[in-house]
Image (cartoon, rainbow, N blue to C red; front, side):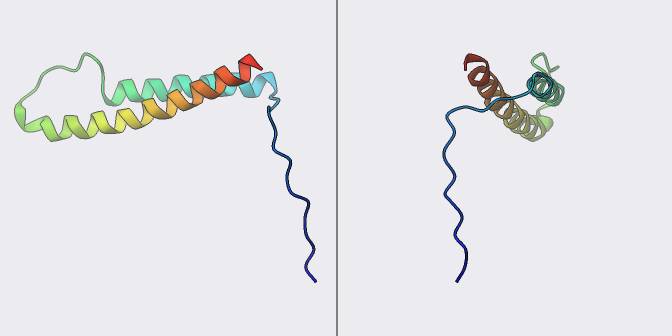
Length: 81
């Protein structure tokens, strides 16, 4: 007969070492930097043929910004506990 493991008790909070927290902050900053590199806010206007390329860059930058927003939200939650 297979063994059954006890169900995991859901945690209301997580404790992190300060180094881990600061590492997540650095990761957040890196994500923002990558997004700004891929799609700078002050991108020079170029010829209309590059519009699909700009769209791809904006979409990719949006992914990094969303990821950064999620990390930031988690950092805020950790900090408020």
